[in-house]
Amino acid sequence: APPPSLDSCSLFSLSLSSSEPRLCTAQTPSDSHHHRHQNMTTKRARSDPELTPPPETLSLAGHKVNAFCGFGSMPLGIMYPDPRPSRTEAKAILEAFLEASEQAEGAAFIDTADTYCKTKGDEHFVEKLLAEALASKTTEQVVVGTKGGMKRNAPHAQSWWPAKLTEATVEQMVTESYEAFGRKCIPLWQLHHCDKVSDATLARVLTTLLEQKRQNKIAAIGICNATEKQIRFCHGFLQDKGERLASVQNKFSFWEKTAGNPLNPKRPPGETSRLNTLPACQELKIPFIAYGVFGGTSARNGKCNLVKDFPRLVKMAESKDVSPHALAVAFLRHKWPVLLPIIGARNVEHARAIPEARKVRLTRADFDSLDTMKKNKP
Image (cartoon, rainbow, N blue to C red; front, side, top):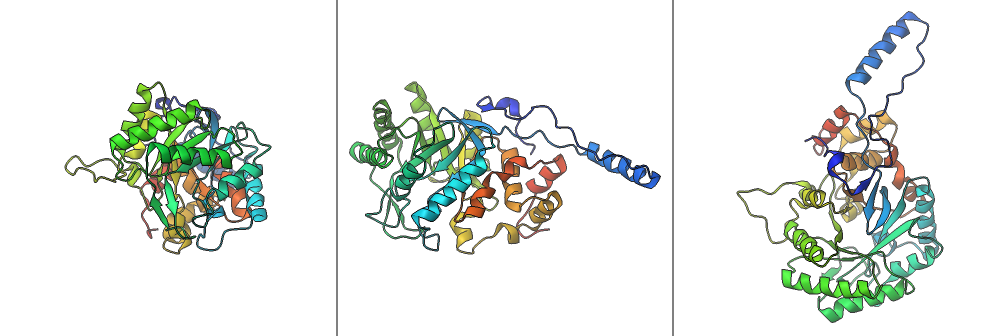
């Protein structure tokens, strides 16, 4: 399918020209052989022009955020599977990411959670780390989104379980994160899980969050790991209150495409199905924060590998002199302009590379090739 029309996404601010970019051609050599070769190359280029790049920025929680500059901070707080970096190393990683994002239009975005920590008793580790590292930054430079609603019982990535969602517990989650950030209003607070959460419970959570917003502890509300039904319910509930659902955060990658797949009219989705959540966000103009874009914990545990699993992606990246990871992000954003991928990093080099996808350009042939790409197929 072709990428969605940019005209349908009024939430975005175009940071690049909306006209088709002109293809650059080299000086024509005087030698007639080279002249003929140049003409053939130019003809091929004209027959497959570059696609108009997706908007570089989107509106998230009332802020202009660069959709190519999303950082996932979970690796800074847990075993992933190696021990987390020291505080000094973590701050250097954050600084490298922010420096690399400075030339991009809009603010960088950093995702975190109250349970990005080792285990019980270490809660709010990354939130406090960010409060220190970003003390001198404004929301024009970086926007932070945190999450609450999960608990930890071990330091590795699989040790999560849902917390109780009562008015008192949700208020406590928000208050503790607010304290961790130095009693500064949190730009975006997201419910960390929605698995099997009823509409009645969601309504109770949202009502509590609206009160926290009125108390200026949080500025915007989002949800994570949600179904299409839950997205539409939360969107409608908040809309009726004169508010809006600021974000949805679900898993999405070349391996896990469920969020982008449509519903099957002959087979009702399961209670926790993520089917059609990306198209729903596109329709409702809600930023979709994608985690696990490069495989997440599965990649860290050796179960998947972007370079090994997708040779076609690697070959195309080599031809464009870009990394496969930058090309992957560029393609996903071409297909889904509502997407805001968050990329984790465990070292300075990887952190600096996160914004590189904003410079990648695709032709129609490139897009179609990646759109039909299969795992382990050339």
